[in-house]
Amino acid sequence: MRLARWVMGSLLLAASAAGCGEASNTTSKPNGPATALPVGAKPAKPGLELHELVTAAQRRGINAEMVGPPGKKLLLLEFNPGTTQALLVGKPEKGMSAHDALQTYELDVVVGSGFVSELHSLQPVGLLQVDGQTLNPVQGHGYTRILGISDHGMGVVHKEAYHRDLFHSALQAGPGIIEDGALDISERDLQRPQYFRSFIAVCEARWLAGISLAPTHLRTLGETLTQHIHTQGWQCADAVNLAGDRQAVLVLRNGDTGVAYHGDPDTYKVSLFGFRAR
Image 1 (cartoon, rainbow, N blue to C red):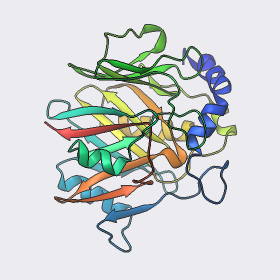
Image 2 (cartoon, rainbow, N blue to C red; image 1 turned 60 degrees about the vertical axis):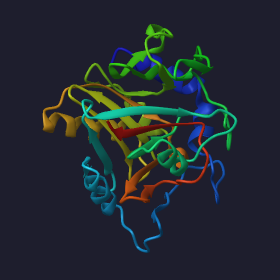
Image 3 (tube, one colour; image 1 turned 90 degrees about the vertical axis):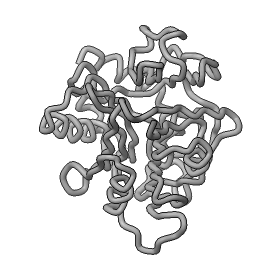
């Protein structure tokens, strides 16, 4: 855990941004953690349950499962980098909903989103680079990881190792959940509130993307994820946390024109990650 102290310092420095990013689009408690996220489908399917999201993904040929113990489960999707294209959508000031991004870019899955500066903001916190254009610069303090896409696939680097030509599209994310194959979240995280989380992991021969199905500590999510990765025998160098709570969203194409979702598919986000079959 060679970045543990740096990560915890970063959490304190970026506390206001993280709180705002994770508590956007609230209703009853504008500044408090969410206790539930919308689950549903378009066209509407009354009574759709979380386990049906797994079925929706499997219909697209995506390996999907719920992992972890009751109350701590993650919806985890597995992608083959050889047959899947990753895409970063960034729309500062304008924004784009996960539902619109899925349709506009003909994606199979959208997961997100990037961190923002305050409640309901469409201003990114830290780096946002899309198709070679820097829409927002690297932030010197705060989140330590850069999650990026190059012509060779997807990767994660520490922000100190980032340079503009490394990726054509990238965003500043964090904290890192896994670094160099090991859990990289201090136990002190258990003293913070629990939030919904969305995340991406870069592994040998596969990419993982997912969302927590209940509010969770990042440490707990990391333990669940690393245990599953170990059980499967996968080699996963890095996993990063995207903005969470009411910013956490996972939308799946369901059939030819429909979608299934966990999280709000219609609220505009400043940035979203997507995946589509090549």
